[in-house]
Each structure stands twice: as structure tokens, then as C-alpha cells.
Length: 520
Image (cartoon, rainbow, N blue to C red):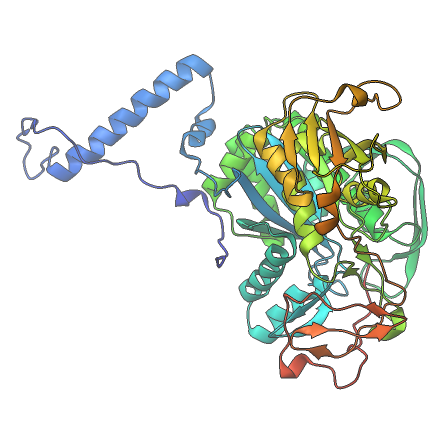
């Protein structure tokens, strides 16, 4: 799927005419040198009359302004097999900034129109990728390199989109890219935003505009009103926090913008949407048409805070999303990069598939208890760690009453959607039972779990592997047949095998080519 950039204009609305279905003919008026009711004019006039009648009825019922009538002509959005519309949100420095085309903000907004739920999934800018055309680099550099070396912004955006789809296994239907100035403009255009800052930030090395040098940026914890300049600094600051913390702040800012726009009535007023777009036009690049933006505005006005979930992947294996690791810097020219712990994108596919497509799991509505019914040691604990990384809610784990259980079984303590059970069974195959053994309802096994997962001997044949097992030293070598591998202390650490390299991008030594320094 290739994107085509569109400059959104209000004159792109489609015509409303339809051919008459009746054989009835209106009498022809005798006007000198002019026939009002020609076949063509009849179609046009009929369409106008129908339109005015429709508008009059809507106006009487709802009392809306003439501007809002354009909402009738919003366009259906593309969806995936789960009914989700997925939009790639990108933030760049823009003209005049060092690293102007680095996409330091990469977020997938996955929208379910049926349930009015949204998942914001952040991809870290330091994720190391390999492209067969332009070589190996951080993912935030792909758009810049594609645009520069392959000839156009569209090619760069499509290259980045393609890699995001490969990494996450999520089809991307649209993209929207905005630069720093545009972000400041939109925040100022709505009169600033209110953000509850969870932790104070003190950053003495915040880049000072387009000049060389730094300035101090600080913000106190608590509820803060941010103008465009301060909001941008809050989004970009990294010195005293991690890149993952910065991703969370960017997600918080997106929600604050949505709330302010809704409060001002922007999302439900087409005229205001158009005015805002005109303000941002020079800073914005999107594949969304005007009619699709209108539809998004309608959807956005109906989304509540509790239906917005924020997720991301990072390098803390003890927490939800901890699927990456950080290789030694000297192997990447002193640069800090991130690599999937499972050496492929399989774990990332699991976390996106579960958390985007099965909201009842991600919301914590499905609570698991894992019990080891085998002679194997620590299986329940290992399973808990792996499932927690995928953001599943494991409320209790331990040994089962017996160590001779043959079959892994999901005992259901309440009704669970079939699709949810199928998702869990892809991770850990097992049978389903609606009858929970009394032994697992009484102490010491009693818990508030919704599912008791008892691991049987068959689990040993296909047990989940901890992707971090054996990772001692992180030393990739030159790519071989699309996969860079190296061994040190028994650890194998490849670039994901699903990517490939060309001759022009293959390093001549065992050390990957140095990456450019990161920009804030």
C-alpha cells in the first residue's frame, strides 16, 4: 500500500448529483434561447432541491450552523480485520532545526470506531533497523535517508511506514507528520493545554533553538498550563529522564490537545477544523483527505479518557513492554540503539496483537492465575514474567496441587470472549473448561482471578521461551544473508532476520557502521 500526499482543500468535496430513476419527464418551459429543464439541468436541480430539503430537516432537528452541514459528507475510514483505523503520527524538527527530518516522535494511533477506543503505541526512535535499499540505522533516520537518497518525501514516508508495519504487524492506513513549529502553533491556537506533570523535570542541556548551545528547562510536578513553547520542551526534554519517559509525555500531550480541542468545540465544528488546518498547513504533511479528517473529528469528539490506552516498547524486561535491549555503544560508533531481545519481531507482534485487538485483556478485565502442574521447576514464575512483558494481568502464580497433570487447561471462572481465549491459546496452547476444580477455589489457591491456567506436561513441548535468556554480551557482527550475528559468552544477537541488506549497506568489518549522533 503506497501513500499519496494530499494538500487538503475545502473544494475537494464530491458532487452530490445522481441520475433519476423514474421515467417521468418534467414539462419543458418555453424561455427564449434557454432551456432550464434540460436532462442535465434536471439532474442538477433535483440534487440541489434534495440537498436543501435534507439540510432544512437536519437544521430543524439539530439547530446546527451551515458550516456543520459538511459533516454529512465525511468519508468512511479504512479499517483492518479488527475494525481498527491505524494512523502513523510522526514528529520532526522541521526547517531550521538540526536534524530537521529525524522522526523523533513515532506513535501509532489505533482507533476502533465501534467501541470508541484508542490505543497509542509508541515506537522508540533508537530502534535499530536494516533496509535493503539504504542500509542500517536508527528508525528515526529512515524518513530522512529515504527522502534524501531516493528522491522524495513520499518515498521516505512509505519506507518508514513499511518498516513500522513489519515491526508491529499492524497495517498503517494513514500518516500525519508535523514539525516543531506546527506543534507549537496548534498548542497556541487552542490557547494552551493543561497537563498534570507526574514528575518534576530539570534539564540544563536543552538545545537552545537553532543556535549552538544549551539552556535550562525545568517544570514542577502537578497541574500545569503549557503554552506551545513549553509544551514542546516538555515533549522533547531527555537529559534527566529516559527516551521512554519522553514517549509517555508525548502521549500525555496528545490527549491534552484532544481534550482542549473538544472543550473548544473544534472537533465538532467543521469550520473550526478547517481554520485550524489552514493555520498548520505549512507544517503538516498527511495522507488524510479533508473528508477523512472530518470523520476523525466526529470520532474524536466521542472518545472518553478511560477509553484511551497508552503503550510502548522499551528495555526494562521487568515491566509491560520490556521487549528490547541496549547493545554496547562502541559496537555502533558510540551511538545508543535498541534491538529486539527475541532477535525477530515476534514478541512485538504478540504485544500489539493482544493489546490492540483484545481490549478486555489490556484493561485488566481478564485476570490470570498460573499454576505449575508439572515436575518442572519455576515454570509458573517464568510464564508470569513473559506474560507480564506482554501486558497481561497475572494476579497469582505458584505450584498446582499435583505435579502429574498431563494437559494444560484454562479453567474459566467467568465467561470470557472466544477471541480472547484464542489469543491466549496462541501463547500457551491448552484446553478450555468452564468447570473449575474445587481445590482451586479454596485456600490457598483462592484468588480474584478470572482464569486459572494449570500448566500440564504438554506445556514442556511448546513452552514459552524467555527472549532474554542467554543475553550476556550484545555484540552483533557483519550481516550474513539478511541477519547480523555474533557470539560472545554464548550469546547470539542478530538484527531481526526479517530485514535484509544490500551490498552498499553491508559493513566491511564486524562492527556496524557508525550512526550519526542523536538529536534532542
